[in-house]
Amino acid sequence: MEAAAQNGDRPWVSVLTVDDQDVFRRVAHDVIVATPGFESVGEVCSGEEALGAVERFHPDLVLLDVRMPGIGGVEAARRITASHPETVVVLISIEDLENFASDAETSGAAALVRKQDFGPSLLQTIWQEHGTRAA
Image (cartoon, rainbow, N blue to C red; front, side, top):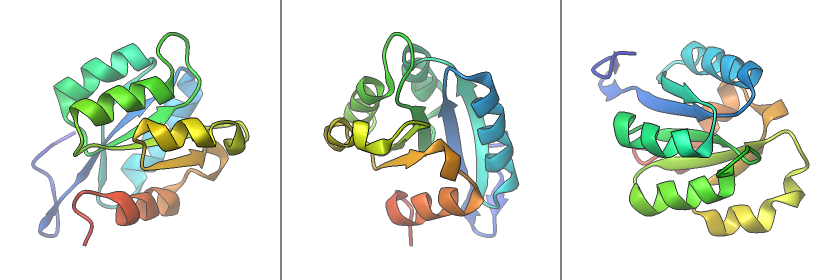
């Protein structure tokens, strides 16, 4: 987790993963570190922890589970995007995305994606489409 790491002349995209399921946090971590140009700067298991982690790590991208105990992903996304508009927040869910579409649209999140679809190409596409440093 070296913030000064370079990918050519572009800094790495720092990613924070927020999910109450340990197995998805591990999978996301593995995908992030296997994707060129991305680095995992942290993993937390609640919306409350996400708010503090964003303050500590200043990630470029936050992967945020929709359903978690306490502050859920939609509310955490609202708070993160309000206090850190430069941070790209992506809501993730294993459930049918239509269940969350209207809430996601008003949360400030850049995208809503299925966990089943999460992989290196989706991570790169999200950053290309929504990244603050996208070319």
